[in-house]
Every structure is written in structure tokens, then in C-alpha cells.
Length: 193
Image 1 (cartoon, rainbow, N blue to C red):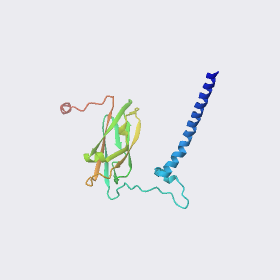
Image 2 (cartoon, rainbow, N blue to C red):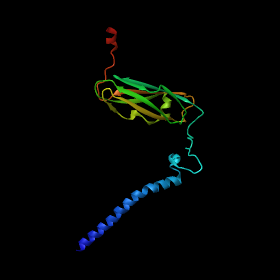
Image 3 (cartoon, one colour):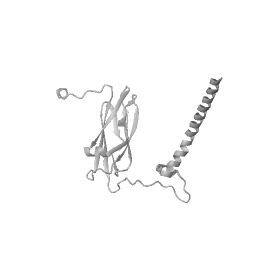
Image 4 (cartoon, helix red, strand yellow):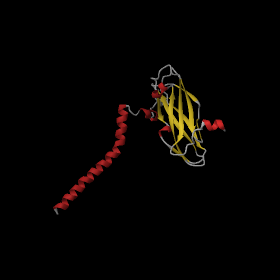
């Protein structure tokens, strides 16, 4: 009898803990919003707020260097039977400005293939200042025969980049992973043919 009573007490205590955890989980959202509101952390949602008598405007990005413009050129190299190219050949950006450019890819083979891209930068000193926030080069992709894809590259150029750099070339080499990539042409066979 005593053991049964102890079990019911323990069950009651565990039930109270479970209910407390459940309500705490629901209370986290308003608590988080209140803390973000007080500390100003939630700056990105300022445009969502309706302020009486004022128009909702987002704060200006003070990290953008409007005093200079950098030309970013895009290059696409591939080894294999597929089409790979940037949607734009170049863009003009200010350091600190978020920019997105699309790359287009099509598997023109009659088989499924997996591929990945590797980026490179010119001049080399631009590499550490070219910050990609989203890039297809981070993953391998599998494409069905004839399948077309578009992939974004979102980047910001660090304003600390040397002022003498006015043009950056972002180049991608796209290659098949785990497949049969054709061998490079043999110059002796090509000359004899």
C-alpha cells in the first residue's frame, strides 16, 4: 500500500514537471520577442512594425562603401559534356553590398550524373575578401539526363579589400564526381590525325 502511494506521488510530481515544461515551451516565443525588442537585436523585423504617423523604413546598411565600385566578372569552366555558364557576365557592386548572381547548368548527356564546382578568384588577394553567403560550390548535385538547374551565388565583398583592386574575377570549374569524365585530348594523337 505504501509503495502504491509513493508511486502516485512520483507520478504527480512528474506530471507537474511535464506541464511546466509544456507551458515554458509556449512562453519562449513571447519571451524571445520581448528580449529582442528591449535589446534591439531584432533589427531585421523593423519594417514589419506599424508605427503610427510614420512610414516603415529599414535602417540603411552602413557597411556599404558607396565611394567605390568594383566590377565582378563571372567565368565558368567545365570538363565534360554539359552546359555551364553564368546568367550575367559581370556586375558592378559596392564593397559591403549583398549581391546575387545565378549560374545555369544543363546535363546534356543521356545518363544521370553527379557534379560539383570549385571556385577560384583573381587577383588572389581578393579571395579572402570575397565572402559567399550562398553558393552551389558547397554541395554535390545529381542531375537527370537533360535536366536544367539554376543556382545562386550570393556574396559580399569586404570593404577592407585594397582600394587598388577594381576588378575581381570569380571563376568556377565544374567537374563530374564519381563518373566517367572524358580524358584530356592527347596532343600526339591530335597532331597525327
